[in-house]
Image (cartoon, rainbow, N blue to C red; front, side, top):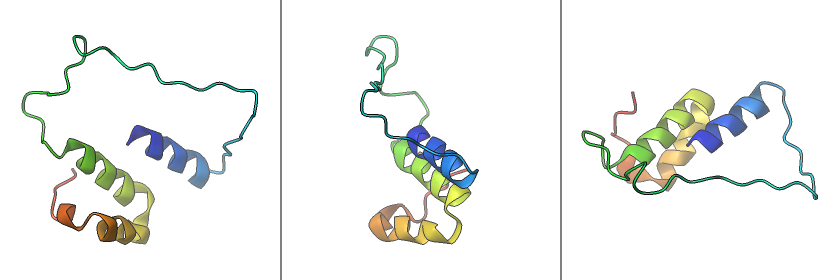
Amino acid sequence: AEQYELSFKVWQCGGVVEWVPCSHVAHAYRGPRSHPSYVPGASPYQTSINHLRVAHVWMDEYAEYYYRREPAIRNLKFG
């Protein structure tokens, strides 16, 4: 959800995102040994919870569109 939150921050705070044809963008993922996919005590819905938090913090009344797309997560607590 970080990528969405950063985009919303830039957009709603007056910044711009530019498309530059000669640029290269990448993401370096950690290997499975250094960053296990399962974190003890974490919710199996952690990705959905992160998306909900972004929707509520940055989308205001438009968060309802996210719920329409993902109705099963409506009652998750997102912190």
